[in-house]
Length: 185
Image 1 (cartoon, rainbow, N blue to C red):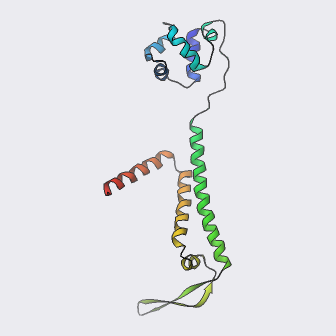
Image 2: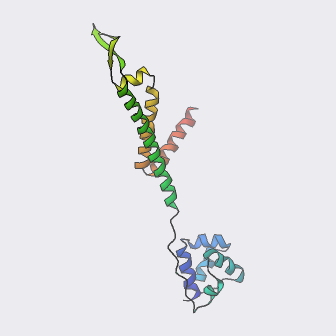
Image 3: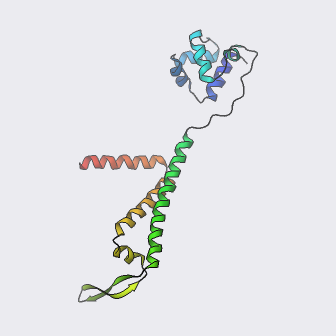
């Protein structure tokens, strides 16, 4: 395998464009193109950085009789970010559902008073009597936990949005929201 083929193979294996490689080496894109076409060869000052960048010895690169060592395919860099998003989504969803689940279970353990509603002449009257029930709604009301439960449901909804929506849509929503906040202030 000749030098131009090796350079082309190594550049593609690394997932670099000619422009990106040229930028890393401090040369022009046309210079990299000429190297790959075989109309020019890298100067000594570019050869060592090429070897370091691609992780091959200079002998392998310069000797036409030696083939390139086989390398495993490059690991995509987007995977960890997607995994973090997925973890965040599951975490938010889990916290929201777990918190409201605890409230629901507590509401089944203890009776709480609930109002008796009477309507007379277009008016509504709430009277708190001796009536008690096992109710999620009235448990939250009696213990003043309604706002906390709403926040937990919003956490769960945010987790679902992170899991189900593509990141581009979430980014555009975030940008629009920040623009509206700037206009309001």
